[in-house]
Length: 327
Image (cartoon, rainbow, N blue to C red):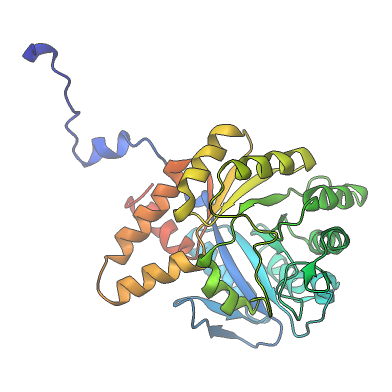
């Protein structure tokens, strides 16, 4: 080959490398999960998620303050109620744990963006994401309950609601009730492609939401399926979703890419508890550089096409972005 016309790699010093990055990250794209326990005063370490905490209602504003100090302006709230029953009635109670957490955070930090998880699994005594008929989840009656829950969150001041239950038709039911109550501007982040994954174990321990019997494969997605994710996203868009989500993240990067290529709506990914716990365990054993693997894993999600990331590493990632380690 003619040496004058041979393709060349761009020789990059540090400044050039940063300038030429194809994937750009910002702390604005990070969302931090916060667990609020109605029975707790102060905060308590979560054994299954090293470095994470349960917060009482008296301490939840502290969690928001720590996010803001790190450069993270968004959270997603998960509630642990004092009381559970078959219908999950604490989920939509006006003074429920999430509703009160929203008010507490907003009173202290009005501009802190609060997203709420809308599901029944933390609130039902059987641990399933909907009402039961026998030992099967009864989809249609559950929609009314989910819509009531989302409405109560929005009326308490939530900036966005995120249904994670995977019931058919839940986005349309929630959109309808929000609109009828003058809350048209509250967006819905739909857990559209949520797989029946083994990566949720540490979360279920932290949230007290493991099913008492059976599993959730009847309403969550089969990990074998790719095209189904596209169908689920399309259905949620038709029902009025404003944003889409793929969950988990690292084992489903192909799904993130397909959804990003197929739909114009903003796309979020959830780097779930099992992903976080594995990285923590490997780092604790001295097998990996935790900081570098945290950055590389997050980068892979954005490179695959996500525009937002829910992650237990949100605060650390925001600081890494500020330093230029990733971003």
